[in-house]
Image (cartoon, rainbow, N blue to C red; front, side, top):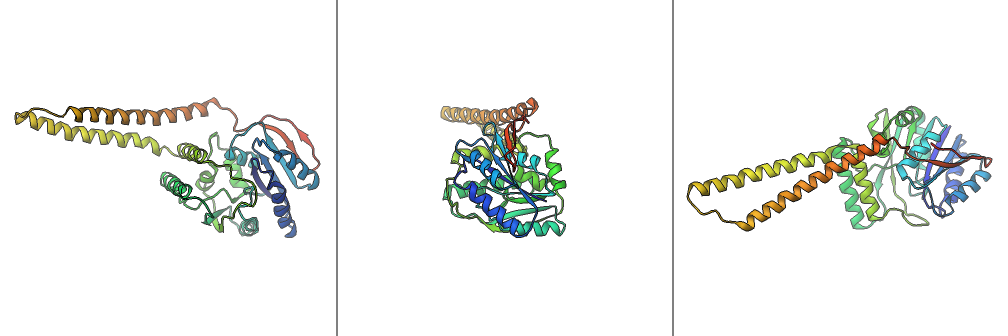
Length: 313
């Protein structure tokens, strides 16, 4: 059976169409499947619509978070709920083309454990967003040693790969990178990002920056090396300036440059504060991990017969 995991946050405008299109596509190919919608604490009618779809379609299941925990948590919750032999993660807004699921499924049947969805084009986006995305993927690719320039959350995972991800204990998991890092026999399909048909994007520039910083720090210690680099810069600067001062002293020249001293102090103080900020951020992430709080809390579940229960995960 194929489990299709569909994270949703304030997607009342697209949810019914997503269920209809994806379900119809798989039913038309006689592929046994289940659709798992994960409502990430939506503030609109998303959960009501998921319940309605579950009443109409027996293959639809729903998970409702107690509050917004983020897309990464929603994906991991969907993987934990899935019963399928393989799982596909796809966005509810259908910017990931659903017909590519069939291609991924065929490749899985050929023996591939992971089928990545790679963006051949990113669709329409503003210049600032495009530059920011390229910078983020360049950083994360350098930090992980994995080419993630065109990576996406749209991918198929075999049950073995799903179990490996679920057994990872880290709370701040970066699904897009971890699913590549675990290895296994992997291939990819290319797709063009489609325009959103309804609703609006949930990603503001600030949320994208937070998402990038969080995922880079959760998957790599590369930013910590910035502290070392800044220390080397300060050391080299001190050697050069110290040499100049010593030479002036030997030659009997008056030591001048009060402005230079002030600038150096400001520069060095800034580097120290930046370094402390980076170290402090990682300490905060360690603090979050050792508290051992759950990745998410499930308030409700619904299955095909509208059976619901309440449970804390």
